[in-house]
Image (cartoon, rainbow, N blue to C red; front, side, top):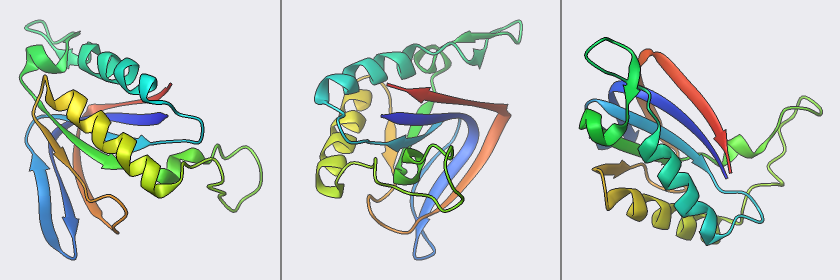
Length: 144
């Protein structure tokens, strides 16, 4: 499982030029399920995301997590993250999880996050336009 985490001031996802979800302040997560990922990785990933201290405190230091910051999460499935870029120039997505199972895990991941924080989602398997106003910019790449 790979996740790109971006701190956001405002973000949205559109399908066919229609906004399907949006958030104000919070996190945008680009999520890739890979072959071999198990349900158990979801809990670990959720705990990490919810506890990342990447929001500013009163001294403008990255010291608060998403819950303390009272932000939301916009979660978007992003199978293209499975390519490492180490070999060749044409991306291969052989390490991406099969779509049906990936969608199941993606939905479980979003449901786990939603137990603690507001979660909006993109539309799995659809061509999406994503608008992100990155705050900072602050961006991290996590692997589980």
